[in-house]
Length: 393
Figure (cartoon, rainbow, N blue to C red):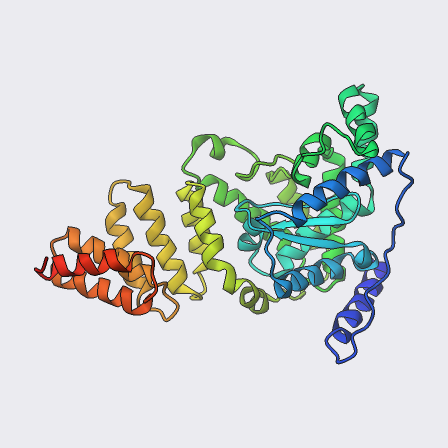
């Protein structure tokens, strides 16, 4: 743990000096590239190709400031490997982060929305860094070979040759589904990820808090199949969220020094500009129970209530259950009381008021929408709607 703490301090010095007029050079890579004709070299060859896919993906969040911020957290928990890390933020509404054998890391928007602070995210990034540090992918490849998975071995060999049958695999999540991680590797990643996060000064309770939130969100799902699963509602099953896992993290936290930082305020400020697109993507998953649970947590401390209540209204409107239209209206009405309310909140209220035969109020809401979104694509349609509501043609 002292080694992690010393490396974290060195990394912090680097990031502090990087803000000065003469920035310090980037840290050198810790791990050298393995020979191409080795097992690990084959894994790197596949990772290189999936990294190239990520770099050119339309889902890549191309925001330098946010990427630098998230990479900074990763470097604090994997300080001695900071020079190896290349972080890609992906606009994907699922809880996931992953790290390839070549140092390429993906962090998805669904994780960034669900982490409440830096401390919770640091645990996940420390967990992923441990998979890299301990070469868990290489362990799993060799275990697969011992189970005579000839197709995988052929894939590795052809990937090295530049031809591979999995050359069009898009992202590391698919690699994780091929190799998976053993229960032992996951346990080690949890334990070492916890150690790294605590050594970096983060709250030791954060890992258990994050997993407890995920369990509760899973139980809030609209879909019985999701509620029955032990894993969070993701397309991946490589990170099972079980009560045993939470119990282990809780026990670790009980024996750790208390009082670590969370950096909640800073974290929320960094992700705030992305709440709208990320929440819009969440609703496209059509699991409104999980979305509403997430929105409740996001608004719990009274922040970003214009955005949060607007998307609560959207979740109710789209779900269309008994009483949901009334709940949607109430959420939109709460939204427009806040300065950060999206213009669309006024438009949706206008349509609801029109259905309630409240034409003057409906017209007023639609006018308020146009005034706040003068370049809206539906401006002409909304203006015609206002004329009809006001008795015109």
